[in-house]
Length: 321
Image (cartoon, rainbow, N blue to C red):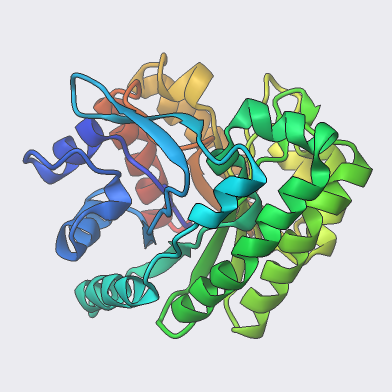
């Protein structure tokens, strides 16, 4: 019975490791600390990413936490300021992490920088969605400028023993798609199809991370060949992971769905155990279920609730369920 979280907030990381850590995202930890974290969390794989903060305006709060504020690439003239990161830095990072993983039995998930999301955050969310209507050619030109580097980044990752490539996409809110079909075909789907093809050509699994209610888009996403769908937010009961598994389980593994908003953050350890056990009893017998949260383990999740989630899965696994 697989168990996997991708990210843990800093207080959770410190509780799992039993010591302070720097103010970084958990996937930026030194290799040995990263591996220790995912082993302590009971996960089956470690997760690593190297985020390119192209055009991002960030704010550091009084606790040292970084918050995205807006993008700064608002015009075509700003495209001249693009400075592509050195891919040798990625090689060094993957060598460090894969070296730390050797002999642990953990797999590795890597998240490259996805073209549409890079453009969205570089422009800024509000201005990006406005540009889709007012100046779509600017958005397409921006995407084209980044595409070769992003595919080169993926190619570097495929040189290493990475098991799963995680692709992030902003497609939906909890009320459904952010764009109509024509816009999806123009701004999102070409990249998602091509990157899935390249991942499979490299004989790796493709994990799509997309928040919100994806119900209307699932036929398209499954047709693209994604192997794993994460995190399958319940969206107030609108999105049913069991129905998704029934309909697409022969082609798609379902990952996540233990709701942060209604259970993991506000609930008790007993409530977390009950909900997790219900998911396992319902979904595990069919196969293709990876247990985890409906997003990640954020600061508002009590440590005891993470332990309840982890131990319920590990107990289920130990019992042969």
